[in-house]
Length: 286
Image 1 (cartoon, helix red, strand yellow):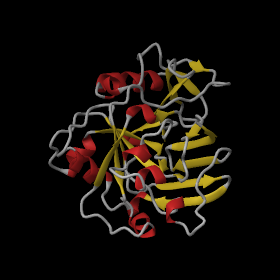
Image 2 (image 1 turned 30 degrees about the horizontal axis):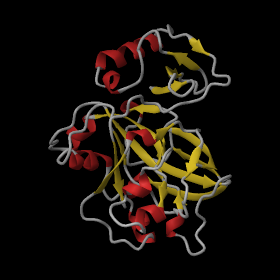
Image 3 (image 1 turned 90 degrees about the horizontal axis):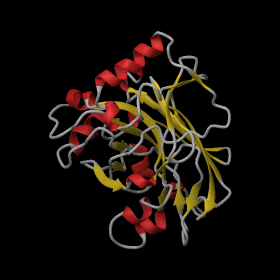
């Protein structure tokens, strides 16, 4: 299933994208929202499937509706850095022997087509298309990769925006360059795990002002999805409604020759992952 949330900020309603890829179906009579509680409840997801197959879900008029993040009340956003061989190489970094883990605040998450704000004082705002893993079952000291994948509810497109000057030139950890307002557009859909048989066979693409900047495959990940979930669960408990951004392929501004084409107000970024949908953001000054 392709689950999404539509409507004004803070007043989104749950919906389902029909199998025709066009029609929205209203889920608000079945579920309160799409969140960790729903994802942890197999019965809730089964009710949605049954209602969809029986043709009982009413059509939702999509005209003029904003698409919000596909997940409400995100618990935490765990990010994996330098997780593609080609991205590590382009930045001059040695490929890590263990996943590089950092956190983004849940309040960085916005809708897939919402405005992205360039922070005040920013000099090097950068793009990063990423596969997001949405957790649907508590993962604590997971032992095997199969067990790790069983904890995954589904997948989404994430834009892990970074301010490189804040991240790399102001001391301390990466957090200052990763947690700026609007720095994690998510969606448009949460695609349930059954529709993504192999998360290591997805193409990721990103354009800036119509120019292709990134095109890579999750096959190039240093640590695949199952290992990322297993590994992270050794250091923190993952709960339904948590999100893991699994890294970006080559093609970011940081990896290009000077003068690097960092993002500015007025730029438009578009990104997509096979089968998971497409995002589009215009940048404005904060």
